Amino acid sequence: MPRIISIANRKGGVGKTTTTVNVATAMAAVGKKVLVIDLDPQGNASTSMGIDKRGRMASSYDVLLGDKTLAEAIVWTEVPNFSIVPSSPDLAGAEIELVDIENREYALRKALEKGAVNYDYVLIDCPPSLNLITVNALVASDAVVVPLQCEFLALEGITDLIRNITQIKKRFNPKLELQGVVLTMYDKRNNLTQMVEDDVRSFFGKKVYDTVIPRNVRVSEAPSHGKPVILYDFNCNGSQAYINLTGELLKREKDLLAC
Image 1 (cartoon, one colour):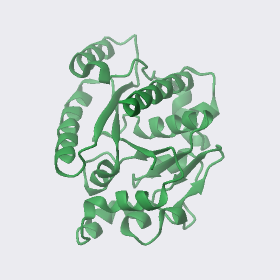
Image 2: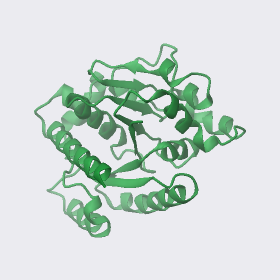
Image 3: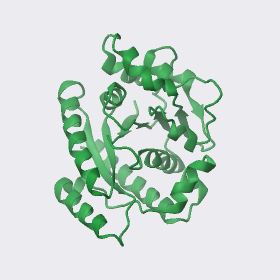
Image 4: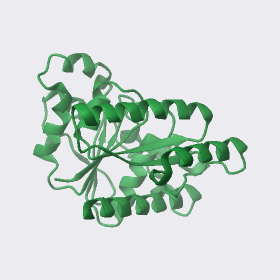
């Protein structure tokens, strides 16, 4: 089975999708076979990889509801070793449909156990809320990566998320661990950025990655071209930051597996 990592934060606009697709791209570049599951109804991970959602295709919604197998929903991207299960707007109502399903919290885990055996890593792009869709992602995962925007209000959301992770670990998934916290939209010229960084590193210690993701216009432009920033502009600061972050993440994974 692959290592399964959710990229999650209850707050929107913190860089979950950007982190997901760029870490997946960097992993694929070093020979890892990577599958991204787009669980956000907005489908930004799918858009960021140039997937045309206007055409009807099998999606993560169909996989969750058991209407399609994982294999039927996988789409290959232009990046070798990198495939994706695209999102669907139908995910917005999936929580209601899942309510009547037995063991509904385990729907995604079951699908991955059957269909993801040929991958090294599965990265799950979670919606910005702790609904039943996100619970499915966390129940299926070995670890969680939390992107955290460098602003004051972001600190409030992360404490709730850590509490939720603890609850899910206790009730549904004992193996679930916080892999790390990554500071995003980092602006070293801003005093608030430094204050947030100091608070986060003081609270989470070594769980915070050394690499920070800077504010970078090329990172913002890349999704409109249907590409991760690593492909759109390899030499920009944002690309280099995501390459370094992926190196840190893979090293942590190696250390975890060695334990």
